[in-house]
Length: 370
Image (cartoon, rainbow, N blue to C red; front, side, top):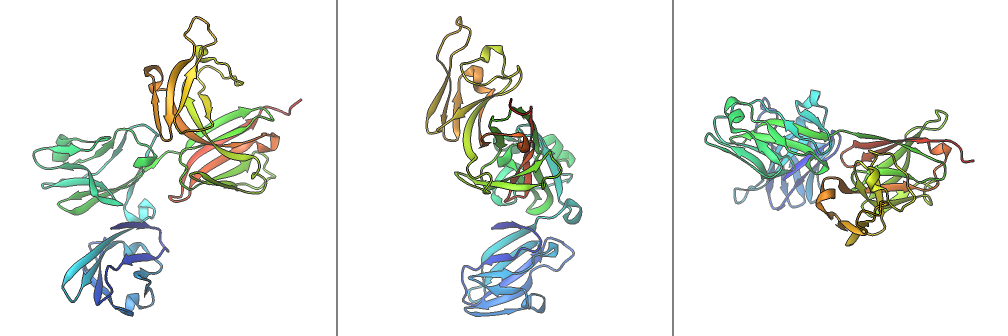
């Protein structure tokens, strides 16, 4: 098992049994002693070393309060009676790179990203995600390298001591902490972060405000008004998949919608709908449902075929004709109805779980409605 926590959070060590088990700790920092016995648990009784006496308690798990950087490492649960290792919990503390030595790579969405590691490994090398240590993304030995789809590693670079891992198209599913191991020993930790997307929208009073949601697994939308007299970073909504909760001022105005976006709009894309765009802008097609819907296109130019099927959407799956395959994508939007002048400002979408800013949408109102 692997856990990534923030300093101050408790460390929960799973106890498969409670009949006389021993918990020991090996720090990530090689300078600290390894396999240090910290607690023994015998049913309801728990005995811990002085350093852990005030911090550890049993809640079916062994909980260690106030985790800090020095607590990073492996916690081993040993069945004393049968001399068997029952569980190993690998804990990594999520802290700034300057403190932990962890490196960070910022990637543009859907662009390649390279996780660098400078380590000459004469044996077996592998890359994994920290929270999925059993799933190997790439591995190398002296004869060859192999990698999973969406990942690349060069055998020549591995032999030179540069076993960098390349992610061919970074997205939100590839974020996280990656670990490179040589012969089972951690040699590099690199975190992949997706760059915050900054977008600008200019709308007319009365039009809805569409705030792009890169993810919908527990995200928070906050608002900072252009008018400096208003409070900044005001939380207006949280979205957790299909659930949406908003502050009283936005409760009746905000809703989550699904959108099919077609990139790089041009004149031939003009269609019968109440939206006017400039060439190069994306075309957002509202999807009232996403359970197997079809999107078709009839051009303004009568010379083009009518009712041309361009995409089908079935929940998270999207299939498009060759002309639209590279241009179309489905995304989620928080729509705020009846935009007005006081709505001008920046809308920030933050991933609550990973404490990352995903997107900033800057909204400017063209002017008061006449």
